[in-house]
Image (cartoon, rainbow over all chains, first blue to last red; front, side, top):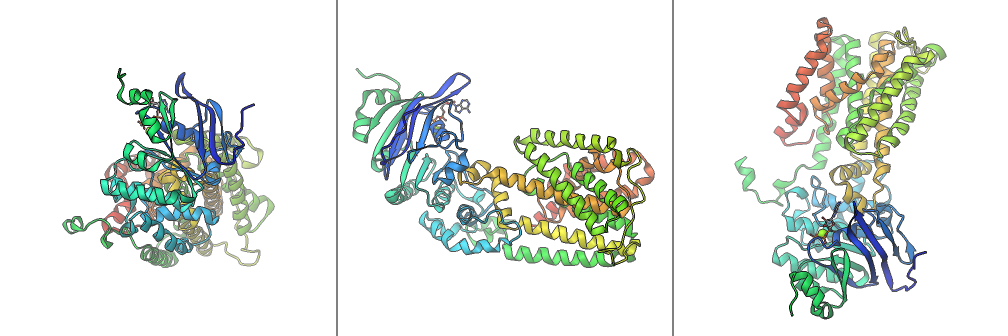
Length: 256
Length: 328
Ligand SMILES: Nc1ncnc2c1ncn2[C@@H]1O[C@H](COP(=O)(O)OP(=O)(O)OP(=O)(O)O)[C@@H](O)[C@H]1O
Ligand SMILES: [Mg+2]
């Protein structure tokens, strides 16, 4: 019997989370507690297992061992779509848009799901126009108003990432898992998205993988450092950044 | 071309299409097609036209699954053929009227679609396709062995009874309009499915399945739904075809029938509204034209297919749509 957290302040937690790929442990024995209303950063060198952790937490991968609880409920056995429907929405490390749909349609797909009429095959898709207003608001939040009618495939990488965030926010999720939301963005876009993440975090919980350490430093309340699939250190930025093991993992050499 | 490249992304020129305008264009084309088909019996043999119509619907139904659902079935003959048999059998043995035959055939295809679909969509890509082929071969085997299908002979001399029991439509020239209405209604239904909230989700799943899941869509349900819709409509085509030729035979359930519908769809342009109709028209015309060549028809068909796919991968209608920069 696994220990299920009963602390109501802990929104998402994992115990003993392990994923083995043919014997190779990409994630091993990870314990994680994400507190309500915080921005929790998951950092670590390339190949540390951050994305794999995200895939496990959202059940895009089945854990080899371990349990995941959301709001005190064991969700280890749920399929990924059901976890999304509980209000836990993830983004992907490689930009995940619907390429041949316009920015507006991308956001509308998310809005449409909450309306609960997505199985309606006998109605005209004109009914979806009632969602345009909200979709445009969301696009404005990420600075994409001018691109509403542009197919996602024609947008720059940074804008695709922004569109992805707008799409995620369209579901008004209680919890977001963002996998390197700012990777590949131009400097001014990084600032804009950092600000947006800060703003949306007010009534949400965010777990975020990010390589940009200045973003991590300024945004996150709590940091978990992964290396070789294991939790190496935990704490706020000041604590973690001084930890010699973390320095070693990042630089790859010991400093005596 | 030069002009277009000067236009910055995000300006109005980057709009791929105005969806309202595209809808109007499609409706206008449907209207033109309807008028052309309404007067066509003055110029062509009704049986030939009815064959074109039945295969146009078959291909359109198949395209719903492949072009819009992103799922390749190589077993659609099972739905077409089983509906053909049920339609022929109920018309001949039970003596039901044409509309009832078609409905019963479609229901049969629908039930088969639920079975085949729920097994097939558990896998993806080539594995899914192979499951559809394997199950369709089982249906073929049943058709070959079952006592009511007439074995090698099939079910022949299927009567065309009065529509709703009152309207005599038996002559080819009259029956043609029954077929025209059934096929047009079904093709318009497919158009609506594609351009519905459901169709939008299908598109999203096709474009990026993982993302659709992460937004909370239960994609398996959508895949099964579109599979069953496609199977049912293929059934309408098969059931109607049995009444047109007054015959249900093993050809209808044979795997070559599954291949033919793939060919029609790809040749015309998968994922386009009018491609399957054009592809079906073309293939049926060629078959008729080359009928005297006997077994060579298959080879000629194969050569045309290879050339067609090599020359224009988007299919005929896909190419035209590219030229005029509007979805067709
Ligand atoms: N499907 C898979 N099959 C086999 N090995 C995998 C698979 N997915 C990930 N891995 C391995 O697991 C390890 C962790 O990968 P993961 O993508 O989680 O790292 P990451 O911390 O997200 O790295 P990055 O910072 O580069 O994104 C890597 O060694 C990777 O090669
Ligand atoms: Mg990663």
